[in-house]
Amino acid sequence: MPPRPYDFREQIGHLLRRAYQRHVSIFQQNAADPQLTAVQFVTLCTLRERGPSSQSELVRATAVDQGTIRGIIERLTARRLVAIATDGDDRRKVIVHLTARGSAMIDRMVPSAHHITELTMGDLEPVERVALVHLLRKMTGDRAGP
Image (spheres, rainbow, N blue to C red):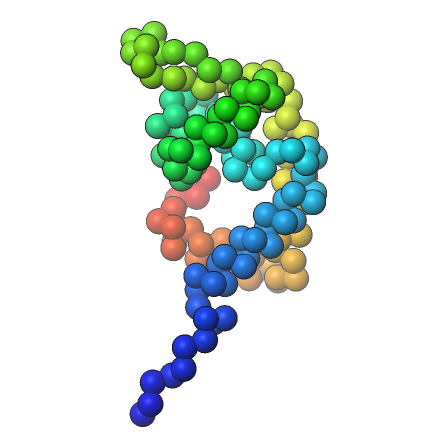
């Protein structure tokens, strides 16, 4: 039997990338603050959930690489959504804190975030939505979820 032809359009990486691109586009078009990116929003949410965190802790919690998280923190600091301070025990360690302005941004964004999720899921049936989230969690090793 001859090998099946390779069709990149049917490959998981290609489909995941296209789905992610679609989501990012939906996010940018529907965010309560068009200057806030999806990754910046996740960073703010992580700080609200976990409290003041080091850059390394944010990298682990958000799955964003060190160089990218550094730029995100710089942009969020410039907008006064987060503040940075040195750790009392280790002056080389930077601790990121959510500001009141950052917390207010999350509050404004949450309704948009729910709407963005709905738009991203599109025409999926309720059972397909549950299955998709389950499979994505399984693929990423996040079996526990929130």
